[in-house]
Image (cartoon, rainbow, N blue to C red; front, side):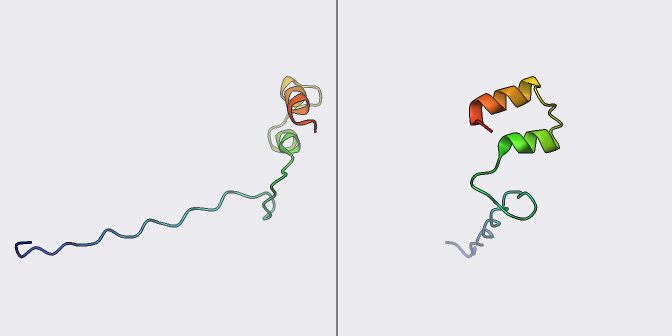
Length: 57
């Protein structure tokens, strides 16, 4: 090195935690219930039917 000093890169920011429902993470989140509640899925809609057939909830 000819008189120049190397500067270190700043450490990467820590990962941002995933959004949780009502402050609690759940490994077994009911995706169909979330779709109905927040996605506005109507009972018997295509979305609700696909979710029910896929996840059984």
